Amino acid sequence: MARYLIRHPGKARDDILIEDNPLTLTFTGGWAIFTDADGTCLAIPAEAGAHIERVDEPQDHEPAPQKE
Image (cartoon, rainbow, N blue to C red; front, side, top):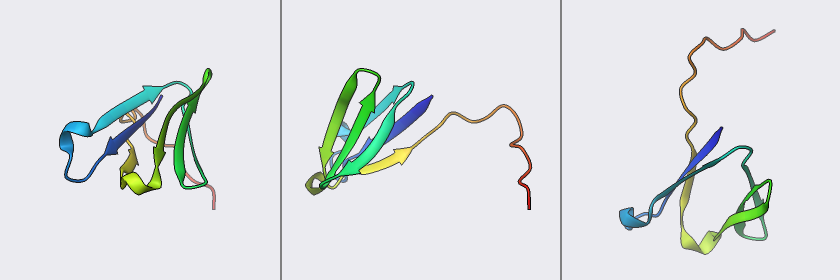
């Protein structure tokens, strides 16, 4: 499940954690746009100065070895 933490510097009370399955993040025309199966669920303008961080749940198993 994709989870994103959206932080607003200097405005901790406005921070939000959004999660959905599947959740897609795209950047278009100065906007960060989150969409799910029903369409756009959140759009944040670049001028808002928000920090967006993907915060997935820890895996309960080792990742597969990478091929070289």
